[in-house]
Length: 511
Image (cartoon, rainbow, N blue to C red; front, side, top):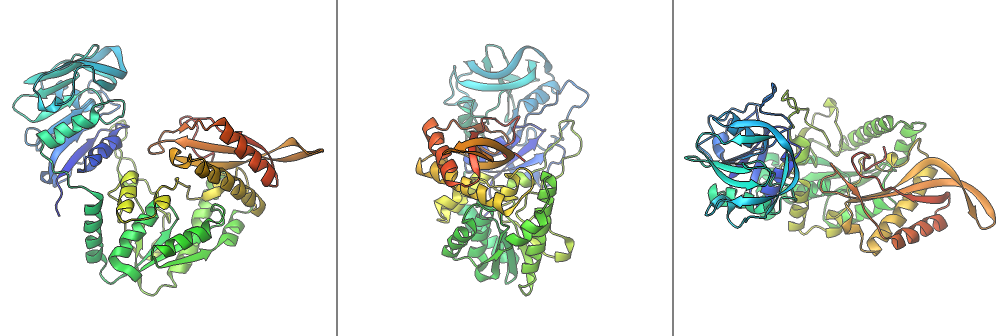
């Protein structure tokens, strides 16, 4: 099935991925491409969106897209930088703003009887984020909306299906942003809403069957959402020709190796569990630098995975749970060459000698879409709702060097914290939670004795994508009960603290 597609040209805005997610929420397929790498098959796109940018159209580092084959021929929505670009280079004027045009604003003028603003009225809240402003509309520009500080907040170009806005419809602070994108994509561009989880499963399974035939595929499962959903898609396509390997690196949560293996077997997957915890702990002995720990874990994983893959005769493919944010090329703020594509694969960078072709069934999906696809295949809701868990596991939640005893302590602490979040119905309200074992001992009193034992930090954050995060205001009663339980039940811990730092400046993990 050939989907109607929307092309998003990225000028380096922090919000570009958010635009794509909002478009996908309308059940419309879209792709992000750098502004200077417009796809050769641009005819296959039914509409185009120009993103914002940290750059200025008045500066020396103007980002010039090649719009000749697009503008006036396809419906176009220009956001922020895109709107200013069209104005500045098409007979209008862009100047530095006299007032700070950042944050919430309200529309105080909306042109009547315009499809673009259907069901959006005066007073509607929008989110501004720019230092330049459009002083004069481009040739044939028609004013569509204003705020008290920004006269030319929205305009269209007469004779074209070209629309431009100086605010961001993709952020939640723009209350009618969803409606605006709906109006542009469905009412004006007439894009079909045919990008659904069920359609994705059906098409992907068919594509995988055609691509893989009777070949054998090996997949490194992590116990997380992405690798699990990728496994289920491949299982639907090729059944027993999918060989899943779930490695216990000794740094998983308490009982996780056995629990997850049992869960996978219930899904009908062909899974082999490999307990390599002793190998990993040996490789990590004496290492306290976070980067060295990560590298040691990555290298050991590759060695274990390679050993296991060699036991499967004639395996041709390596499957990975790569998702769309991992493969999007983000444009640098200076307009220079695109940044290197990130590599967040479940099995890290495998060496050339493995000679396996790579298949990535989820590379077109965002994380929330992966969960919806999993739900459409009736996968367990608890597995799909799992908090993100770092690849190096508890190694980066134990600050400093690792020992078997430290891992045991943190597993016990983490289990109490996570189980209590579940029993208090707080788990699904938190994006990610975990405990950190700190490299400090502190004095305590237990009974009549003084103790000199470990301190642990609990962390719970809310986020949409992990790029930014706020600490969660967990109830005091919950923290009190959890702290008491940890200190009473976990030998070696006498102090519990709660991390109330947001990201930025603090990262979610401590290492």
